[in-house]
Length: 123
Image 1 (cartoon, rainbow, N blue to C red):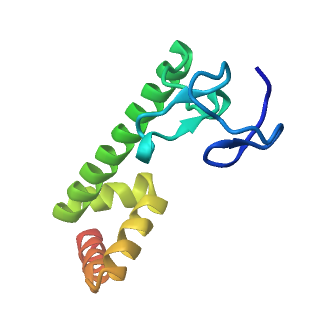
Image 2: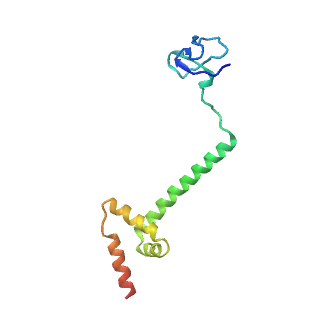
Image 3: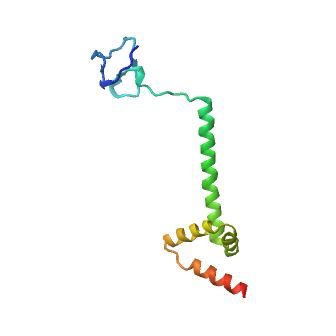
């Protein structure tokens, strides 16, 4: 078998020979229209290495945890002014992201309401 690419369906770029049924380097690809023939070097791998599967699953789980964590954090900050005050003390940069995101969505005045309440509670 040789490494080559197909210039057009049915011919090899290396030799120019037509790819036909029965040739040792050619496999039938039923997913192509009209029963086209392809070179085996162009097939996609159908199996993944077990380590790659574990890494893929780990990354997928981490992304899902991050998405749901961000959703629940936003929901908690959106419904609790006391929680926003806690966030302003411990993680002010996260609270700033919250304020910018709600202002970007067209809801203004939350930041000012929080600052007013927090100033009044100190007095």
